Length: 394
Ligand SMILES: *Cc1c(COP(=O)(O)O)cnc(C)c1O
Image 1 (spheres, rainbow, N blue to C red):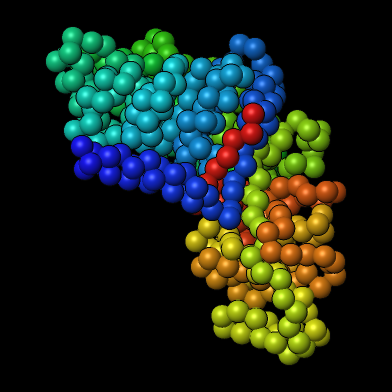
Image 2: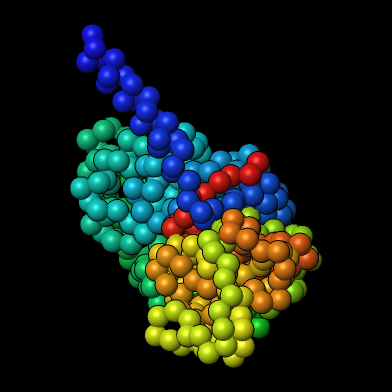
């Protein structure tokens, strides 16, 4: 009896301890209403007859795959896209209904899971078709597949000129039918570039070449095409970055959108660890890449590249404190970085720091951070979102 009591107390105690101590200084806040707003805007842009596949790969571009999918679902979404099979299975296990596309293929030994979880496979090889057909025959079921075409992306898929032969080659396989043909644009974020129209013509010609051997749908438009190329919507569009509140072309693109149409859903909040004043001539952080020119007030932050705040932001990035922009001094460390808060009064350890998002009148976007890193908002969202605790604001 006494033993049981001890074990029980230990369990209660450990729950108490983990419940108390599992909060990081750093927190990603995901604003669910923004996700819903963005889905509604993209659906309105695509038009009523055209479903929007919400791309939720990469853990929902850092926003949390399941929670993002649920937000889009509340806004009316019934079609979801991920890269890998394992992501699709997680969505189903979390109770996400509707169509779930696995867009980069699957291992043949995993073909069974496609049926078990009622997923939609994208294929680009005879072997994948054969594996699905075998499984379909064994289960006495039929499966619809989407064929991936490479119409100018230079990435995954069949060449448009090979589509017809491929379709013929798998037409004899039992239990399998072609439910769709899809491709992807490399430059649709820029409305001035000619490749999008060329790529689309190649894709359309390949689809037309199937004539009466194909009764499925076709889809190619990503966020860039939804915003810039309405003639490419086909039967469905697939949006990613726009649903998370960013224009695929970065700041340049956002300027052309009416403010408020796309609302960034992610912010990154931290707090000050220590405030201290250092004399002129003090070297700051690893490598001594920064030396103070005058007496300087420093704030040490518990944010580093381990938290997705890239080392490329060393001596470049800015953060918001008391509604003001303050610059990063020196190298970003693994778990810490320093900012110059010389102009600010009354700062103390524990005060709020915004690394991404709004504070007062100021706003730091993923586009801004990306520009400092020589990257794109997509990467910033994945890095910050997927390396920190997330909180969801309804
Ligand atoms: C990620 C992805 C998209 C979405 O791209 P965005 O530029 O984020 O809109 C569309 N289609 C496929 C196949 C993708 O992998």
